[in-house]
Image: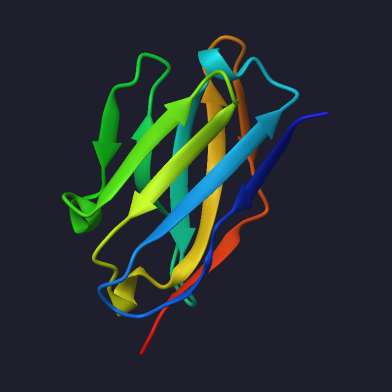
Length: 117
């Protein structure tokens, strides 16, 4: 059974930092591209950052220079370090694991991030 379990969300003031974690089980973690997505109320889910199995990273323009995605294959965990947080970063953040061979995509349950004073 595949599980992606996010943690680390919460309430933070503008300008603050949070680190999200996503622990995976039931998959061969090292062959999966891992991504963080977010969905704000009334908006579509959007890609925040992705890290491939080869550790190539890609970021949404809105978070470049503020967020950093990383992975620890020994711990089957992907991280999202979020700095200089803004109110517009408020959303539910979801972890995704995606593979081409075998073709598969899995989602976590999400973790709430609220940026407010």
